[in-house]
Amino acid sequence: MKRVTLTIGTALLAAFLLGVAGTASGAPQVVKVGPDHYSGTWLEIGRTPMFMTDGCVAGYSTYRQGKAPDEVLVEDGCRMEPPDGRLKTVRGNGKIEDFGSTNAKMRVRYPLLITFNYWVLYKSPDKSWFISANPSTTDLWIYARAVPSKTKLQRMIRKASELGYDVRKLEFPPQ
Image (cartoon, rainbow, N blue to C red; front, side):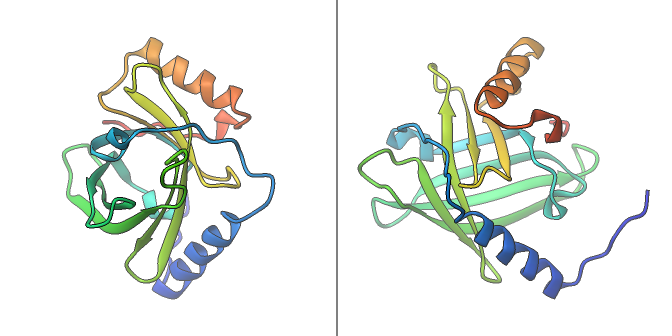
């Protein structure tokens, strides 16, 4: 398999285009989440492949309350293969765009002018896992508080499919 090396300029252009794609019409329905959603660590169980996560396994997102009620401090991280490899992290400042209504739409600004929109499309009844996507659903993530059993993982994949996502596009890096 041929590996492509991206320059910082190419990476910034791709991130900008991803941000623009996140504003497309025909946006999906979001679900209401409580303040507890944006606290603690969520493990990245499944995701859409993208150049920024090439070689990343054991991914996670940690949320902490910012200074304002609608502000979330975000740390995204992963290990470079294998799961006990070098830790790679990036920090961003999130803003809950629909604060006080559903609290499901968060925009995170990362260094180098990179911005992502994360919308919560589903949260399990027991609040142990959720599915988020960008508004155009070109990128989708499945997060959980703990590594799921095979049965629970199948339930997560089925739910993503029910939401209209082509789950054949997802990758499930080792935890």
